[in-house]
Picture 1 (tube, helix red, strand yellow):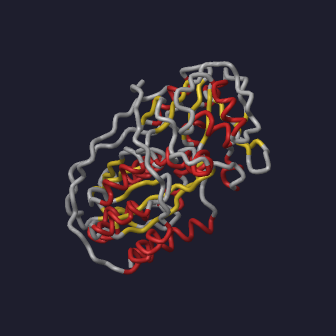
Picture 2 (cartoon, helix red, strand yellow):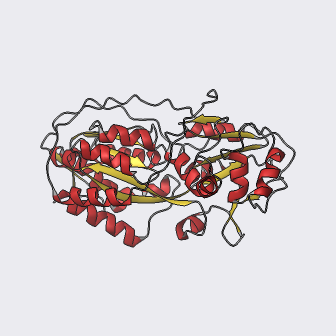
Picture 3 (cartoon, rainbow, N blue to C red):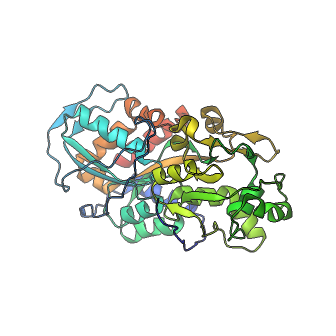
Amino acid sequence: MEQLSVKISRKRFAAAAVVASLALAACGSADSSEDAEPTADETAAAATDAPAATDAPAATDAPAATDAPADTMETSDAGGSGELAAGTVFVTGSSTVEPVSVRVSELAGELSGGELNVTVEGPGTGDGYEIFCSGEADVTGGSRAIREEEAQLCADAGIEFVELKIAIDGLTVATSPNNTAVECLDNAALYALIGPESEGFANWSDANALAAEVGSAFAELPDAPLVISGPGEESGTYDSFVEFAIGDLAEERGQEEATRADYTSSANDNLIVQGIEGSDTSLGWVGYAYYKAEGERMKAIAVANDEGECVLPTEETVADGSYPFSRDLFIYVNTAKAMENPAVASYIDLYLSDEGIAKVSEAGYVQVPSADLTAARDAWTAAKG
């Protein structure tokens, strides 16, 4: 288990206007920038004993990027991906999106006989945007939409991109199945347990007074050790949790919109899973696929909605948005690199094809509605010109 990591908190910023303008620019302008070879450090992966079919796969090795050969490989995909160009692609970003991107990379290797070689890493959404906007990656995954200041980094570097929604995730609050005293929590209770005013709480019941003060319906928390494991600030899953559970109350109370700093944090979702499973009275949060992979070794805690109804994450509640912590997952593509390197375009064509998008379900996430998939395909077609 990694040592306790103290995080430097940061404010969230609205990004809609800049993302929209840059996405439109990506669909029009074909200005290109020189390719940069991938330089991001490979992230350490700690394997768990979860089923192999749903664990986040390790990053694949690939040679340094070169000009893609002209030869192509036919595919049998029903989604219309057509031919796959030989060459190399570098994908970075969200560890939540990583399992999907890895599966599509494996499909690309199979269909191309190994000629389309895709390297996938998952250092986190925030780190991925930084790498992507410095020109070091062809594609990045995001478990949240790109922020205004991150999009500005791309703009400053002359990097145009297209945003593609590829899946829906249910950010899952979880504990050990042995923790029978906690079945459901509301945002106020989560704020009292994990928010900026909970620093130093070592027992679930330590949060009772604060939970009652902020209006929680769950202010009778058990007298049991509170062992928290979760992502660090480099993760989009951290940002999403702050947005869902902490941000509004923190703003109302004049607190920083951040979690407490004194918990075991990691950029590696498998380590977070280990932490949640390693204590009978644990508390943590991960993407739905990581929870689903664990079967009976992890218990989801239901989240109360605005009407006070406790909702568990399932494929149905995540898909229809009734689970309060549902969120969209994205990939972002450097449009200039896609035009310069046919291998990048081939990989995204495959990603959005019927066969490629099926990997979303295989990875444990929920497929987007058909209208959203069509919109993503249309945006990609427009970006390619």
